[in-house]
Image (tube, rainbow, N blue to C red; front, side):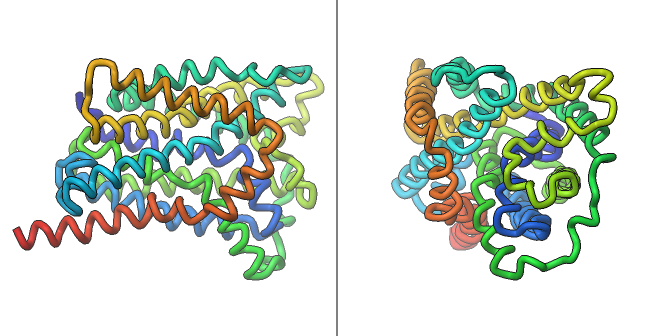
Length: 357
């Protein structure tokens, strides 16, 4: 079953931005301080180029495995696609732990048990076992929810921000900006999430350009929100781990109306839940393209991966700082390797194969 290009654009413009407004603003502020918009813009420019390339690959009308096989041969394609699935499962770890901390810290009055987040993994296993076309339908539903949630947070937060706190520019220096740029890679694997969708939607006129513009539009929303976030908290921004849940509480009407911002926080958390499960679904899809689509294989793969991540979420419950250091420091290079370099190589080698055949 095919998905529509509209659903792809909804994902890029509405769903993907939600994953960037939880911990990323505070993480960027650690190194870049008031220059945090510069590394964020750098990431969006790089990832927009990658999204453009992935959508260009859709013109060839082949699946991800088909493109890999055409470019590198059957055996190499199986190895690479298996590694790609492992990367997607690894990329799922950070947003998953991020969402877990958000739920435990914001939605519970007392400290919950370590396994209180475990129902998410049942949902993730269910989503991962579904065909990718189901995600397209979900994006139709989540796009207006994401728009409503972001609009509500903006309305409640904007009046409390002092945007002059972002000046003077470049006060953190080039080292601070590039350190923040390195630390932010763990939140930018959207082009990698798109690659397994190749072959599930038809390329229509100017789709690559439309996709890039939609992704940039979502990026502009994230950049504006990050500016408001820093304008509110300034030097204490690094301590505000759950950005979109913190900015709205300074709205003047909160004291009279109560925490009405929780309505919009719930909406964005719903979108974030699907966004956390999507790497598992695309990773399982990669494995299915390599090892076949047996009757029980989707369920086996999805349950196995969800179970492993459940165990990791419990074991790493008190080690999130170490996870951030590993993803943003030691292993940051995996994200541009799989989300930027792979599309470039597929364009180059796929074209060469076609010209020589």
